[in-house]
Length: 88
Image 1 (cartoon, rainbow, N blue to C red):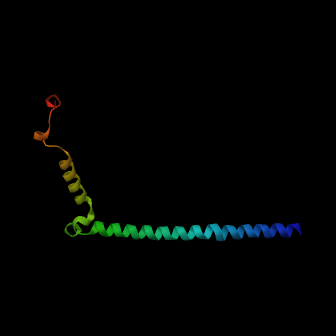
Image 2 (spheres, rainbow, N blue to C red):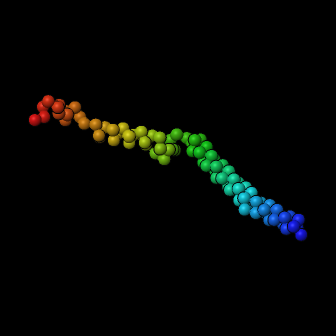
Image 3 (cartoon, rainbow, N blue to C red):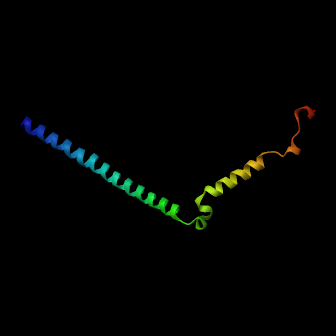
């Protein structure tokens, strides 16, 4: 009797392991691999586009232009600068 209860308990643990751990991990791994493949193909498509059709959507050209513009805007001009000794 005790042996049957032990075997049923082991079968229950194997069942829980398979259906509550192994199958969800497998499905999640499959879904992540699919999404990574989609992202990789999108990146390859963007990389293989001609340079003229990319425009500002590529981001690399637009970001450097805006960072230069903000850097120039925050830096004071030399004629606007008041030296420390002149302030009274």
